[in-house]
Image 1 (cartoon, rainbow, N blue to C red):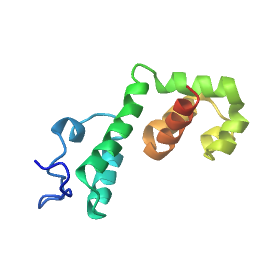
Image 2: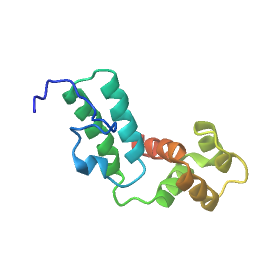
Image 3: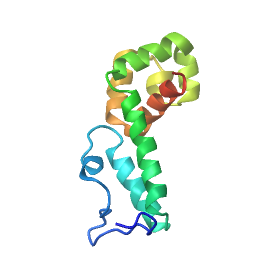
Length: 125
């Protein structure tokens, strides 16, 4: 495969060059990674540019390996408090009667909010 060639998608829209391990990765970022890959392909990025995006996205998962969402929330609450978290990520579970339990419930069902919380936590490592 020529690494400088532009990436293409096969007939069902799945990027034909992505390793199966990336496409079958578990966790929160799988669908966002695939969507990002499709957008990059449609904009004519080269394979190398796309692989850089994949590696950077996968690095986030490695940084969080073994750290539970509950631990992340507790750490952020300890550092910033609920009011600062509510300003940083404006969701009801941080603003109105915030608890760890309600936050866990919401974040487990809402991938975009969970990604923001995880990104905030990683930025402070």
